[in-house]
Image (tube, rainbow, N blue to C red; front, side):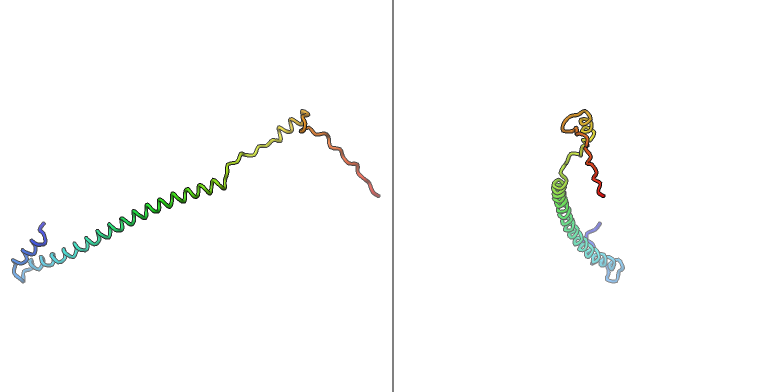
Length: 116
């Protein structure tokens, strides 16, 4: 592929009204403009890529910080507790065998007071 300077030199050698010369001049202007646009887009892409990477790293850092804060809150609110144990069957067995203080005497009923 020829360079832009070679295209300019070839266009200068051709007659002024030649369609090839007009096409070379048009291509020279168009390619120059397109090259400038491509360079601007590449610079913008590089800048946006850098910003994207910095935002991703900031988001990951904030995620880690929020996870540690959440773990701290969760551990403070939900302390591990032992599950409740039902001691009633054990106490009933001891009471049936007569062990103190589990064995209780029969409850005495109060006499009913009849008022007339």
